[in-house]
Image 1 (cartoon, one colour):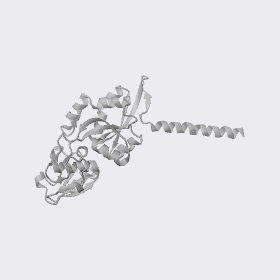
Image 2: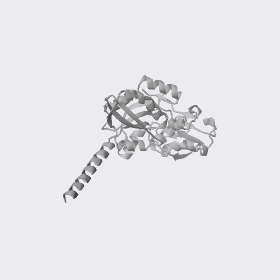
Image 3: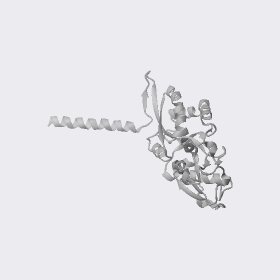
Image 4: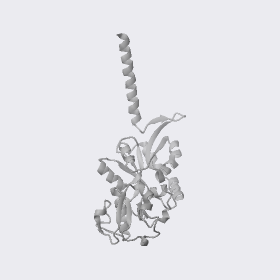
Length: 277
């Protein structure tokens, strides 16, 4: 009987230790020590590949010297970086504009926080069939992002260039239902923002976020239309409410807004990405 009691106690002890281990693994901002004994903090930051992940990887050595082990988790979509940050699988993300974040917080019941603007990526209109906006024919099929923020951004760019009219060109949630005049009878095809570059041959023009333009190796200067730098679409470092003031996040903010990063952005992207600090 004693033998079986000891076996059961051993099993229970193993289960408790395992449970504690799993709980610790859920805390993404994990701590450790360097070889010299100094404490380090691991930050997991979600980002789209270009330019966000590239910029984050550029500052990894700087943060390492300050005791921050920056792990960059790359995504190909705009949904999971927020879902995983909200679920504490990430400590921060860096890929989105403030209007997009606000729309996602509202629609998904999240309270994520924009803590630092880093850069601006001018949104543009691209075509493999036409070399100027004047060549775009009546009834042209235009691909636009299928979510509220970037879909509105596409329509506002068209309206600002006199191609359509909207009820309110300052409304960052405008949709095709808000078009009040469409003199060239354009047809709008909503689709996932990440796929528009791949579908350019199937439409007459695509309204594309700059990060996807760069990933697809499309020349940003080939845009038929481009936003001005005054558009309210800086890309932000985003955290949760519970960690927005953490020391490691402060170090990340400082590194992302350094003179070194400003120079890296300017030298690497030749105006396709503009520092916002």
